[in-house]
Length: 365
Ligand SMILES: *Cc1c(COP(=O)(O)O)cnc(C)c1O
Image (cartoon, rainbow, N blue to C red; front, side, top):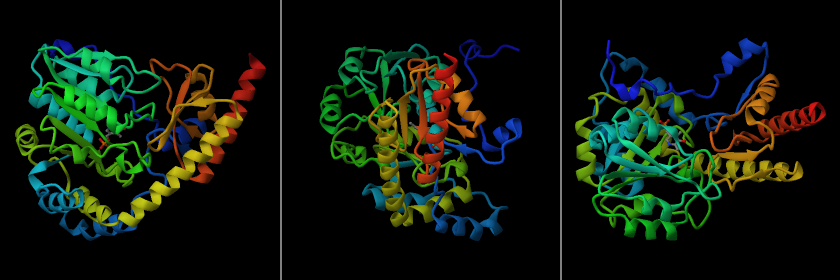
């Protein structure tokens, strides 16, 4: 059998290790997963109730257009329903954009250490990825502009950037958007939008009117705590949404996902509370890193990238043996781990384990 040649050498995505697998492998009773930026407080209780209420309807196909959820989200965001498309996670929206827009040889620009799904989908469609180095862990918007050519189709800005957690301030973003040629799409991935409290941060939705080439991505997987349901969305001009809709599978989001998201969206008090607790968690972790003499990137989402000044994969393994799952193996930051901001108690357990790990490694060195 002959696959597309461009996918032969593609790596299979390696997710954060599941809790159950780590428990079994290492014989641990308690494992704390701070590897996939999940909400440590779970979803709003009303989301669970809405899902249970819909369980009698499992035999029915979902509404392929997610009309009720689309209307509620449009009202929440202050846009029209035809500005929105839902996906099986915002991951799917990324794949659909690549599917709808890339021809082999088209160029696409992204940071050299950012969310891996942009590049994997560009690879699948035989587009050429241009990686622009981050500067201090932050997108170099001028550097990205300098790489625009006639072949450029899409520029990806992850804001906050995963894995570094940094943001581009609104002023720089607007200057960048003003300079990008109108025919080049800019995808602004705001998966962590609801967590950001920094006043210099922009709301991508508010920029859509001015920039018809802009697409904003958000998700119910992060602050809404519904990662298991796989539901995220894109917001853009009706023209772009219509094009992406042409390559979408008819029933790409499930009934339960739509029901859960609708209820979660209505519970903004819960979102507010999660944001507040996350901000406290960042202060807690940054304080501990300072005490331990470790440098971290300015964190704006629900995760922090910290330099442990040792091979991160070794620190990862040592933490795993203590029942803490984090993320390591970032190509350009081999001594950094990315840790999700957990509950105060989880953060404390992580810091205790990290301190022990770093001490042990010092003794052995
Ligand atoms: C988690 C994440 C997403 C996608 O999450 P979904 O679960 O597919 O909605 C998208 N972009 C970034 C940067 C993320 O970290």
